[in-house]
Length: 181
Image (tube, rainbow, N blue to C red; front, side, top):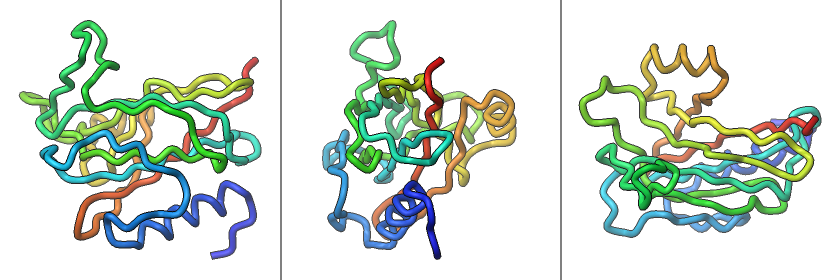
């Protein structure tokens, strides 16, 4: 594959890295590991690639806050009035290539609700000089039509492909930031 933009080259390298067996050390961003070895669920490595919407150039000083439910669909927030304090959460800055890597588990379905709504919340992705972005990351192999239609209509949901290997799931979501007005 011939890549011409900086973001295309970075994304191609990240996708190529996903061909490695699960658990193989990746060159590049240090992952934010938010689960212990005894956490129930299917392992998930998610790369959030933050780029300038107009140029596709990685944004190196962006910060990310994400959270999600555990394998059983529970958030277990430290503050019951604030879901973003969920037990499974990561917060930090992207690396010089605009990448934020998190190792976690695939979120579970909400108990008592129709299947097809596993997701990770992007509470915020923000950088100086850019308008902040939030939303949810949904998974192509799981998302139901109602949720997919909502994601398309609102632009709040990003549906991504996950790649399965012998030890878990891997995925990349690109977040484009617009200059602040």
